[in-house]
Length: 212
Image 1 (cartoon, rainbow, N blue to C red):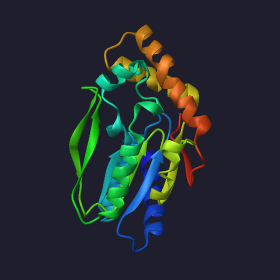
Image 2: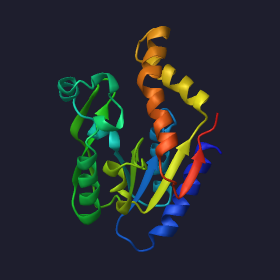
Image 3: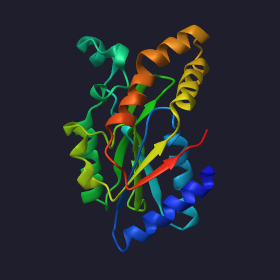
């Protein structure tokens, strides 16, 4: 299914479910490299075509800082579930749901700087539809399943593992690593994380393939 068609389908589903609710949160989960960020941006534009305000609330904004991960001895596994502040993310989503009439700051992860920037985005009262986007939002683990009550619609974006592997290696190549280094980085961390999402996530309301 083409990206725009996928976005149109999801936006129609969200609007139909939302009814008269003041705020609606869609969880967009999936393994790394599957295209969640691209789809999220397309969804915001599609909501706009329906005259509906929307904003992205990325889970990646809750990466623990490298200094924290280094102290804990987990820097090499950055991106694994335990390297995120899941409770902090849940607290932000709760606030976004319960305080829809306020401007609320959202942290955003900067890949080039390799750190989260506090207050890098603002969710406003005009943003009725929120796209909570991240790898582990449907992970069957206590730190993540407690968020289930906050989601009005859950979506799992999928792709074949061989496609994900190629994309993840390409991602590291794009950051200037050589072919062998890029492959090692993907195999050591990204691909195991992708396999975990595929194996251990609970069933979503909708499952959509991002294609080959």
